[in-house]
Length: 426
Figure 1 (tube, rainbow, N blue to C red):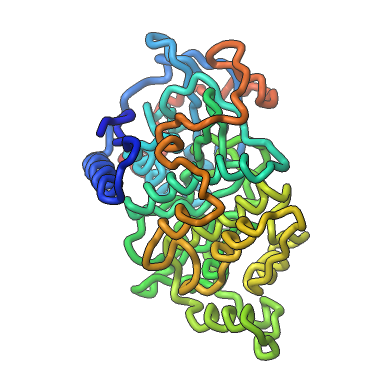
Figure 2 (tube, rainbow, N blue to C red):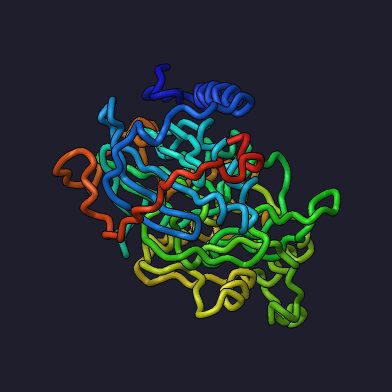
């Protein structure tokens, strides 16, 4: 076994036992960093700022170059005042703690971080090139190529007791080799049991999140995402940010459980197998949710990649929620039988039937016939055939990103550090 960065990688022919050993090694590395978060390790003067890549509710993301190393990074700048106003301090500190501890081929991670009076700043690991995932429609082999990377990323995160909770195309980037990087850990959370907070993207929410009770095991309000309904402002690219860049369809709020009347569904008039699954779901409503929500979101993503649109969509979020909880999915005619079967098992409202949440865990997904041609080791080691390798003019090429008006006063230095107590652990 050898290592890729700080994460262990598998060799051809590795057994399930070898994979467990690799994950255990990854867990030890994560735990060490989790228990001893890194201190600020750079300053603003260490970087040349090149251009803004995206803007959002709390600040912006910029392409920068390290003056000494000449490496390119995505610099996320969060406005402390806005973070405090929207009650996102704890969430931001948690995101930083997760990003500095993870290490996996298909996830962004934290290379530098520091505070600059009115801002707190994250920088990911060196990225010579990135482009936003922007495919409207993919044939199944291409959808499978990207989906396999998400499967491995979730296997890694879940082994570390991390729930991601914000999968969607806007949070995916393509690197210089044509592989994915999952970004935006603003809603990620370390959970060893269940959690209750409603957060994520309406089209991608699992039914148990929608029906989740808004209180934790001790009866305290579990509003760890946002204290009120917040839609992030639109851009198409996201760099591991909590509210910095995202889309209007992302939502986080303190959740009051939806009643039958609010949902607008006549539960007592339903029958058939799908309806019985809904009844089982309702029987467990208000019990919170676990890592299985990520596997539901994977099903939504695969569907959207292969169809060009998500399986549940409507003009208003409440209408989307009704469709999700109904458990009914219609498949386009061009979907293969294998793909339909996989999606039926991922987009399964009954948690006792959902793939990824059963006795065999992720193996039910990895061993499914839709993934029969996938070489998981080659994917993990980023040696599989890539169907699209971006053309790069030079390192730091940002041609695929929109142009934004630069904020000349962004880094004005205040005489006194703002919100020093709130961000003392950053």
